[in-house]
Length: 318
Image (cartoon, rainbow, N blue to C red):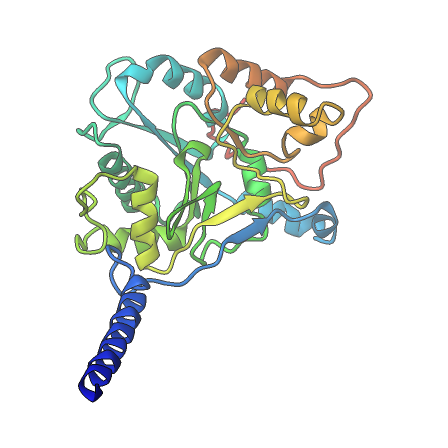
């Protein structure tokens, strides 16, 4: 009887130890290594108009000149019609925009990445941008050719952000334990984040060319994995009312959803007034957006913005 009781107690103890072990192992993150950083979801907001009005006239002028955005657009030959639309529309408002193609294309000037792999294209484009422009630009914006961006709104959003800090901004998405900025809404990196990424690109254990996993993950997720090793964490960009400013869908789709979900508040329920990006546009929609954002004006309505972002003198900016 004593023997049976002793065996029972031993079994309970062993079972308890085994459960504790499983619990501990369950909290160990596999695949990212031990040098990872705990992170709760971050929300970064644009400055409000009152903050801008507090800045002196001279400071505003200096700010408008100091914000320099370099735009990276990843393209493939099949995107040639989108490529043409992006080239003729919003990229003219970047301080400099360059197209990075999977192969040489005679129709448009581009930098040949010599690969179809989107992650390899992305890391090569970032490497090229850092090597050639790290002393000229303090913010780097990457987008697909289906994205339309309002660069002036991007600069406004970044107004009170210090590029010497590691910023990694856009529309954040959570996938398991990984939080990343979706490439569909565009990705913004500060020069400090670019420095850290450039260092990691030469360390295959932390930022492998092929992902270092059994299955392949998307290029935006892979970027987040690499940046996380350097303590650079994804942050969701919002306006002063908490609405997303980097959007992964088109305006038309947002309006359609608003008509279904908020029929009495279609305009208010659609999108932010200070939106930076929309995605999933056709070439025609790109030109419609260009007309609506930069050309169309309602007579009698005057917008006295406290700050104006001027393009450089040599810019092909309309």
